[in-house]
Structures are given as structure tokens and as C-alpha cells.
Image 1 (cartoon, rainbow over the protein chains, first blue to last red):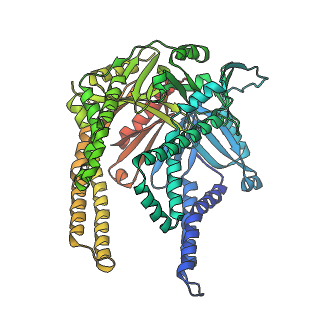
Image 2: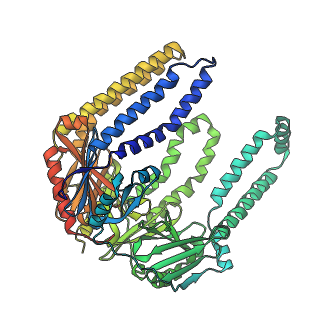
Image 3: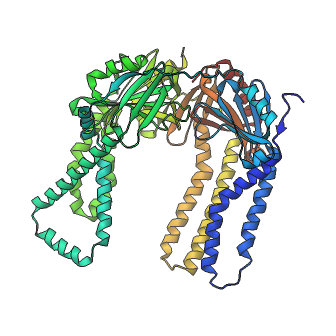
Length: 472
Length: 161
């Protein structure tokens, strides 16, 4: 048989697909049975009780058979080619060079028939396996694996000697906890708990409480809110301390090992070259004290790597960032001066801050007292102004930097070679002012991360695209 | 300064295919409308004007979907494939543009549903390690050729992520 012939999998795949189908129908069918039992008070069983599941099973069986028949693969041109699909035909080409791992896995049924399944994974696409062959003969699976894995090198494991780069003291962690801004989450949880608790209190009490609240002076009400606020703040600090206690960064060759946690000790291992972007985040509580957090996005890899963006450094002084990066990730210790947004962008930034107040218009008409909200407008407009002022972009041969702000000021640095795609979007209002929103994506463990900066000059965006096109 | 759309266009038949899709949606809206009328008749006697509002809304929606959106979408759609990268522009109100370097492309698929197949059209979908980009409604042959062209161009530049 030639290498390039299209082949089907072992027919046992039909059974496996069928069982999987049944599994995915299990919950709806259970609901169906429960409903039937609820509705049919009488003891006699009606026909629908069994017919509906039967129809589903037959459909699932037919689907499984067709699915097996139309799923064909071959190995040629250094790639795994797959044709599949019953109604919608799909073809997929996975090049050998892109494949990170191939795994054999055999469950009980497969083992009885001396078969195995094969998972083919490529970098980055962690949310779904690139290709999954459900039932193969052992020899065939090995043949595919050898064909696809010519270039993969075996990794050597030896006793590591770790170098400690950073170990945070309790004092510094406490400072980080106090300024973490986690209070928002806790405050809302406390609020929800409080309102839930209200439901259990007898109404007579509430009435009495209501009367007494009315009798209380404003000062006392403010005091109560303050107490709840401080209580939540305390909780948020404790939560932060539990999560980040004993924070330590170690390095071993290319690997960065981060250990933290009081109750559950978590260890994140990441290869420095897998880091795709670095974000320097200055939260609103931290910014006045010139403090920042450093996070990073990591491209997928082995299982013990974290599943979301990693806190590289919980807290450090702004002027220490450079030294920190030089020690840990020298390729990111860069000098850059951001190009600011054009002046006409300011109008759009202010307008965007204004929009929520515009949307509340019906509320003002309905309840004039709500006009009090308008007092917060200067704050919102000032935030809009800050967003405009902090916004900026920089790119050179090595990297691209975007600075944006929502509440926290964020500076995102990505190396040019890590940028996956670059693009822009433009809505009609931006078209009118020849502005556009610049975005670029990098790999990040679940899938990808997009960074965007609103209202850059269109010509500036054009030149950034040209910069990207002439990549070295 | 104006946007210069990438040169290549989708197959002109795409408009017809999109319109037919729109008509299918319209049929669904009709069903919703009938459902609403029956529901009002049998279960919940609500004011008549609610039905009128719903009806007008659905009629407008189908007009937009069948007559306007396919044309606007066609006007803004453009792509360009060079040796180095793929440039894609699309959008109806907000225009989106993306540049995908060949070096980052992981695999290329073509797919076509029943309506598309009737018009001999296919969708080309281009996946990088994290993102996915689709060029819908290309002529079947064009899609096939592009798939081959892109996979051979992408194969030239192998680099680790």
C-alpha cells in the first residue's frame, strides 16, 4: 500500500463515536425522562417514553457510520491530510513542522480490540486537539507517529540547580495586598451575601430596622458603609496574602519557576522563550505610589504550565522594572518612547466616557432624582482624558509596545517575532476622522490574546502594517 | 487618507448565496411571527400593537438581511495573498483588517455547505496557532488553488513558535 493512499480508521470507530454521541445526549434524555414522569401521573407507560430515545439512538448510529465512512486521512508531503464531513466537507492539512506532540491513548474498549487512539497537537491551539483519530491499529498509529515526528527531539531530564531571582518579603506582599484592588470583588460578594441574608430575616424586623434607619443620622449610615468597606478590604488583603504567600522566582537554564501560595502551593514552570508578551500593569491604587505588577502571556506547552496569563511579579517599584527585566528576561528590557495619539482622538475618548450618561437619558426623565449621577461626570471625563493621554504606540526592529488604560494603566510589550497577526478596525465615526483601532495578537495558553489601542491615526496604522510586512 | 481595499474580490455569486441564506432566515422569522400570533390567540391575550411592532421589526430585519447586507459586505470584502502574507479586509459597519504572515500559518481548510455547493462556492479558512480567519464564498476552483498555494508558501518558512 502506498503512503499517499487515503485510508479510513478501524470500523470500531463507529462504536466509539456512537457511544460518545449517546453520552452527549445523556443529559437532555434524562431531562426528557424526568419530564415524562412528572407529566404522566398515571402508571401506564406511554409509547413516547421509549420512542424518542430510540429515534435518537438510531440517528446517532447512522451518523456514526457515515462519519466513519467519510473520515479519511493520508500521509504525504510531510503532512497529515484529513478529509472529513458528511454534509459539509472539510479538509485539513497539518504540517509535520507544526506538530508539537502526538499521543497514543487507549481506553478499555480499544484495548480489548488491540487498538489505540491518536491525538495530534500543534502549538497554541489548546482548546481543541488538532486531529483526533479515534480507533487505529497499533502498528498504524506508530506508523503515523514516526512519519510525523521525524524532527522532534527527545528532551533530556537531569537534576536542576535552581537560582533564586526574587523572593518577596511579607512586608512587600502586604503592600501588594493593600493596593491589589481585589476589594471590588470582595465588596460585591459581601453585598450579595448581605442581600441574601435579608431574605431570611422576618419582615417585622425589617420594618423596625427601616424605621430605625430613618431615625439614624446620615453620619451613622456612612459609618456602617465604611465598616463594611474596611471589612471587605481586610478580606481582600487576606485573600491576596493566601494566594501570593512565599512568592519566589527561580531560574534554571531557560526555565522560569514561580512558586506561591499559603494553603495550596502552586508551581508554575515556563520556558522563557515561550513567553509571548509582557504587560506592565499600574493599578489605580498602585499608580500614585509608582508601583506596578508584571504579567505575561505564555504559549501553550506541557500540562504543568499555567492555563492563563501569569503574574511574573506581584509588585515592584516603577524604577525597578528595567533591572528586573534585565535579570529575568533581558530580551524585554527595552528602551522605547511612545508615539502619542493624535489630538483629534481626544474628542472621541471624551465622547466615549460621555456615552453612558447619554444612555441613562430615559432614567433622568423617569426619575429626576437620578440626575445626581451627573456629578460623577467630571471623574468619567477625566478618566477619558487620561486614557487619551496614556495611549501610545511604539515599534522598532525588535518589538511592539502598546500602552492603554481602562482603569489601570497597561503597557504591553511583544517581540516582533511573536506577533501572530496585526490588523485594525474602523467604525463609521472613526472613518469620519480617519482614525482606527490598532490591534495585534499573540499566542496565549487557551488560544490567543489581542491587544488593541483605539483611535490611532490611520496613516500611523498603515506604517505599522508596513513595518510588520517587512519582517526579518 | 482613504482605505485602499485589498485587490482580490469574492465570487460575485456570493451575493446570491447570501441572499438565499437571508431568505432562509426570513422564513424562520415568518415562523416566529406565526408562533407569536398563535400564542397570543390561545394563551396570552396581549395588546395588538405588540404584534405590529414585532412584525415591522422582523420585516425590516429581513429587508436588511436580504437586500442590504449582502451588497455592503461584498463592497468591503477584499483579500490579497502575497509570498509574505495574507491581507484580509471585511466588515459591514465596522471594517476589520488583518495581516497574517505566511510564517505563522498553521493550516488551511476549505469547507462548503449545501447552499455554497449549489453555487460552486467554498470557504477558505486560515488558521494560525491562535486565531482563525475565513474567506467565505470563493469560487470552488479558486479556493482549491489558494489552499494549495498558501500551504506551499507557508511550508517554505518553518520556524518554531
